[in-house]
Length: 567
Image (cartoon, rainbow, N blue to C red; front, side, top):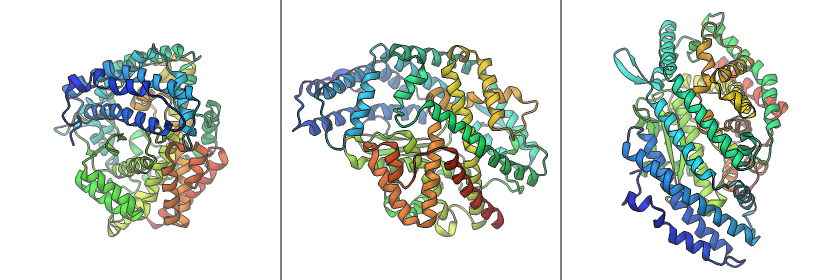
C-alpha cells in the first residue's frame, strides 16, 4: 500500500480549495430533526477524507524519517491544509451545537463536541501546527541514534537486545554504549523541550486556562477522574505495587547471584539463559500471530488476515524508521495500520499483540458508522490492547500455533506478568513528572531541575535499581520517554487500563469464551458510552484505588508463583 493517496497531487490534495466546496455545502445546509443524522454522517465522511490524508502523510514520515518528499508534504499539510480544516471543523461544531439536537446514540459524542468547541481558539491553530512539527523533530533526533557495535552500524533498539546477554560484561558494555550515544543529543533535546513548553503555555493561556495541565485535561476529555485522583493512584502504587516489585527484583538478584541490580541486569534471564528468540523474520512474527488470534476468537483472526491482505503492517526495525510502535486508523478505508520496530525479541511479540488489540478495537468500533461515535478515550483504548496481550497467553506455544516451546512459553508468560507489576511504578514516575512539569512551568524550563525531579521520582518508585555512579544517565531518563515530549500528560491511561485488562484476564481464567465475547461487546460500544460504562461492558470496573490494585497484584503474584514452580 502506498502511503500517499491514489493519484496524489500535492497541488490539489494539499490545497484547501479542493475541500472547500463540500465544507461550504455542509455549512449552508439546513439541519433539523429529520435530517440531522444524515447531516452528521456527511460531516463524518468529509472529516474522514482529511483525517486519512493526515494519517497517511504521518505514516509516510515515520516509516522513513529520511523521506524528504514525505516530510515536505506533511509540513505543507500542517502549514496550509490543517489550519483551514480546524477552522472549518469549529464552524461545523458551532452550527450543529446551535441546533440543540442530540440524536439517539450521540449523547457522548455531543458532550465531547461541546468540550472541543469550547477549547478552540483561532490564535492556537498555527501554534498547534508548530507543536506537530516539533514532534517530527524529536522523531528525527531519536531515529538518527545509531552506534557501531562489533563492526556494524545498528539502531539502539537492536543494541538493547544485548541487555539480555548472559555475559554481564557484554551487556554492561552495550548499556554504556547506548547511554553515551543518547548523551550526545542531550543539549538538542533540552532545547526542543523548552520550545514544547513555550508553545504549550501559550496555547493554554490563549484558551483561558490557568495552566497547561487544566487545558490538557479538557483536551483529553477526562470527565471521569481528576488530577488529584492521579496523585492518589501514585500513592496507591507506592503502597501496594512497589513492595511487590521489590519482591520480584529481590528474587531476580538472588537468582543472578548479585547483591544489587544494576541497569544492565534488569532484562537478562535470571537462570543465565539467552534471550527468548520467538521468531527470526518479520514475516514469521506476522504470520504466527494469525494462528494465535484465530484461537482467541475466529472473528479477530479474520480481521487480522484482512490487515495482512491489505498490507497495513510495518513490523520490522530498520535504519531511518521512527522509534516506537503504534496503531492508527485509515478513516476512509476503515482499516487500522500497525507500526513497530521488531528485532526478534519476546517484547516484539507482546508489542504486536498489544497493537493488534488496538486494531481489533478499530474494527469493532467502525460498526458504529459515524466517526463521531468512534472516538474513544485512551483509558479504554488501552484496555483493548493490554487485554489482548493477556488473552493470548494460552496460545503462545508452538504446539498451539504460537512462538515458543512449552518451557519458553512459561518463561514468556512469567516475564510478562513481572513486567506488568514493574510497569506501574514506572508509569507513576512518568505521570508524576508530567504533573510536576505543568504545575511548575517556569522551573521545568531548566533541564537541571527536570533532571533532579526525575531522579527523585525514580528513587521513590524504582528504588530496587542501583544507579550508583550513573546518576548523570539516570537523570536524563525523561529524554527517553517520547510521550513526555509528544503526547503531554498522556501515560496514566496505561496504568488505569492495565487494571481493567487484569480484570478481563481474570474473567478469561474462569471462561475464556465468555470473557472474549464480553470484551468485544465493550469494544463495539466505541464512543457511545462513558468510561465506567465501557469498562463495565467489557467485564471490569473503572477503579484505580489501592484495593483494586491489591486484588490485581495478588492475582499476578499467584500466577507468577505457579509459573516459577513449573520453570
